[in-house]
Length: 117
Image: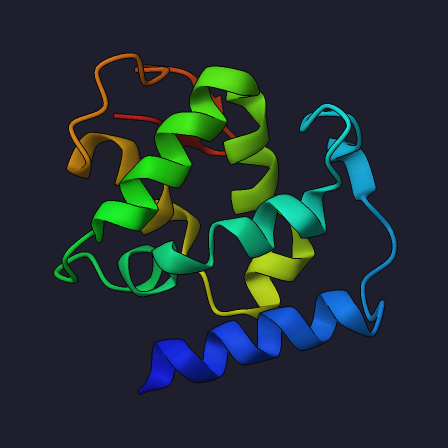
């Protein structure tokens, strides 16, 4: 039930413009803003907070599409204040592409102080 509360909080924060600054990651997601990209990854919340949580197929599809269209966007979302407010754990979130078996993931690329496996 906790992921549902996190998703609701995430949507609320975006809708209420509680977080309007895009910080250092502005432009990493192309024409999409980081809050919108973060909201699109809401199926990944459970997997981004718990290493033992199953990564859902919708999450894997969203992450694969994001990596294909804007590879640096995933890192920008993971490191965003919005993700932090939602309880996302960057050290766990960077493992999602591997846990999804995404072949074209950016292996070895830095995401803040983390490296994508």
